[in-house]
Length: 177
Image (cartoon, rainbow, N blue to C red):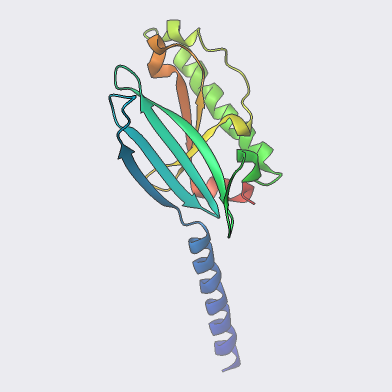
């Protein structure tokens, strides 16, 4: 009886912790479009709520209908929503995350530089180390985290003007506040 009670207590404790983690890491995203008289295509607005934060990405099409995105991050307070930096969302260990993302970006950059069809465009990219606050952050439909960087090159090389690194939520969990 004593062991049954201990095992039952352990099972309940473990199941509550798992349930709390599932709730804690729940991402709720909504995507909408709106017409803007200044643009011929719709503006795409995607918002995702995660851990008291609102991640907003706004997509605006160019003259060819290709979308570029602007990213914003807000902390949701009880009384207000405040715009914050990416670094405010992560803990002090986030420098490791920043290094990981940069390492993956560099690997992709080096690999793409060897592709003859895009090598001329790749030369326009002044590749460097990017800080956490320079990334756009969004979430995929599979609840993965997407870190995007815009290289700031011309529209003639639009197909390589930005890069994204997608990580599983479990990979970044240790870097969250």
